Length: 141
Image (cartoon, rainbow, N blue to C red; front, side):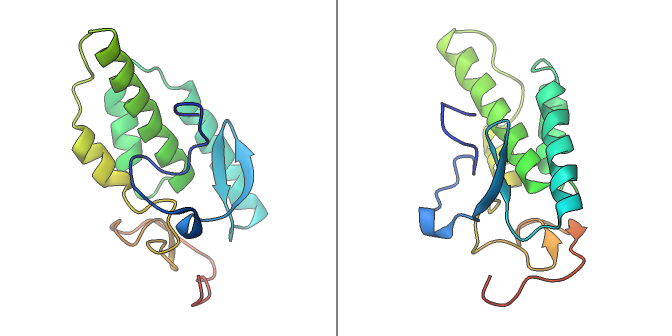
């Protein structure tokens, strides 16, 4: 969890009414609704993968967060870990990771938002591609 709050989005202002509902939680990360059971298992494994990455490997976290083929929940977690690492380094007056926070935030913009959720992919409409859904979301989503 970033800052003691569940991980829904990273510095992307979305209202509670625009958040994608969580059907489960794993390591403080919201697991989005509208996913088959097997996909939820995959998402949890991806979150575990991000949890296991060293914070010294900022480039791997940035690359993961920016890859639309990865589950949105795990991408948000990777971005949240980097944001926390950046903040901690700043507070302790240490060298910050050599990554652009603006680029990181742009790579996960729209994730966790119903408005920007792709009906065709497990990704944001702002992403280029992503993993295709077996069945597109209904229009009201």
